[in-house]
Amino acid sequence: MSKSFVRDANGRMVDMADVTLPTNRSFRAAWVHDPAARAIVVDLGHAKDQFRIAAHAAAKKVWLEETLPAYIDAEMSNDVAEQARLKSRRGQGKSSAEVDVSSATTIEELVALWDEDSLGANPFAA
Image 1: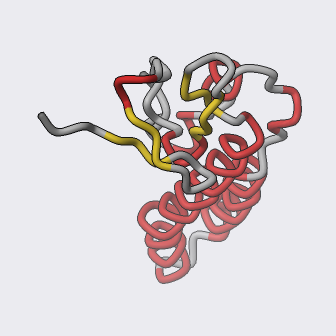
Image 2 (image 1 turned 180 degrees about the horizontal axis):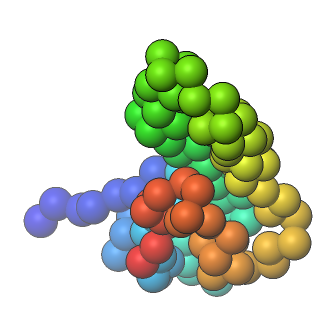
């Protein structure tokens, strides 16, 4: 009979039969083994780092795929008002990507900080 293992964020291999796993599997890179609880738990600090990276990538994708082409079109048509609106949108995307995650004390609170209006679909939603 073969065993199934999971690797935690610290590189330790843990037999899955010996532990319970988190219900939210989105932050697997933040999983750590808690031997006392006989569980794999999500390290909130690692999860916040993972969240920041994903938010930055999403904001960059929105800027490159939506805002930049629209800005180029506005520039080509000499639409100054549209250029100004799109320039201000870049700042909004940047601030969304740099959301303050320090207030989150649980994974659920962290997931709720994702702004789908400016970053698109939440990759951490269960």
